[in-house]
Length: 316
Length: 316
Image 1 (cartoon, one colour):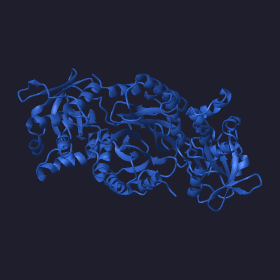
Image 2 (cartoon, each protein chain N blue to C red; image 1 turned 45 degrees about the vertical axis):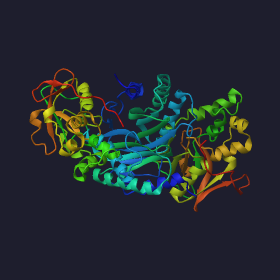
Image 3 (cartoon, one colour; image 1 turned 60 degrees about the vertical axis):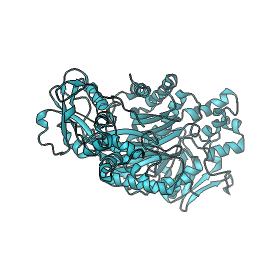
Image 4 (cartoon, rainbow over the protein chains, first blue to last red; image 1 turned 90 degrees about the vertical axis):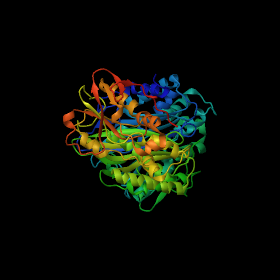
């Protein structure tokens, strides 16, 4: 008789995204999985842990969780300009609920298909719901995008809307209700952030420094500024403010979500102005510039430095 | 002010085994790590989770735990005939105890040095002590060792002693005391199992099927037999019985440790008799043979099939 956790393992092993093909030579079932990497490419790897009640609400829809967990991890590959190849999933579960597993695996499969990534293996243990994903990608040798190349004179850009996921939190947690047409874009950004893989690809050879905004714009720009040894100046008036976020959060809170909310999973990057031409990415906005110095500085419409509400990032 | 978990991250980032070099082009600190893989090689990947109180005693010596956690994971690379390249570590900790972290990182470093593997990244969360390691290795394309190639007429072998780690459990848990010279080899095998990387390397092109014994000899031979579509016959009299294990466990219990104890992390493999010559591995023993059919069968000294005490594997 297979045990409860052997049944869970089979659940994952039979997922569509766990079948060999496209670089996955050998999948779940042996001591290790086996992957092919084309000549002239480097391997990119990142590990993220998501804990129920800290990184996502508990309980929540397992389908949405499956999508979100994978998207959040693949976003790190986008930030390196990498192509997704495969991921492993270590999951801790309080019990084997086949209905929950069905939904979760379907969510994983959906996001795996959209990102062209395969499930290569993992491990299952009993315990409070926790997910650790390790994502593997590939990038032409020497072309990976890092945080450390920003230079004075360059522009600071973001790849898409900010603050929506943070603005969605009161809706996700059931603490607030708003009209469906306002809630939808916020909830979509929270539950189904689409890793900006195409933008990452286009930034290879163009951008000098890239990361994905996960801890909040100010905090992550701080990481980029520190790694590059430069100062970043953000024009508050250039930050995109969506009507949905404004309606849900009000102006002051909306700006706080944009600057410090976290969970955005859009790319922030620096590049010379000449490199901006030819970038085929409608969501990209220039939000500031790079100078010598250090730290992240916020400017109002008159070019005066202002102090944000907060800089840190607090999980709920 | 860096937070408690930022301090933990720095602890790992400054570990000797986390410094770039030897295939690790970019380590901890960016969105992803970056690895080089020589042309003509495939990537091998495996993920394992270890939970305190289930997969190791809690509390325990953090130095020994660091060694053991990495060894257990690297053993999966040995079973594929792979060379270790890098690993990621997702660690959940109830608190940031710098003394504990010092010991744990030193243990990781020691085993990383012995296995020539580097720490490429990871994640830190607060919670009950849990470790998820993803190990990455490389193997010449097409030469990875799997579980599925065993053929009738071949020999069944193991790469080293069995049952010692299971025999050590009562000592590890403080439930039994024996003379130090008897306890030492058992405790060493429990806390510092050395992944059989050299044996795995030698088995490339020689062995038809390989895995590492982690769930117990009978259970893992069952996996190999099922994957290969063969039957395995184990001669009980050929199983190595160490004096230490005999003294600690008594004859019946010692045999149970050998057959079903688990946590051995030695390789079990099948190969044609002609391939045995030239294998430079003093610990290897022939313990049985492969025939058509299915299942794992245990034979006594008279060649009669006998029933083992148990087949399963139960974590403490």
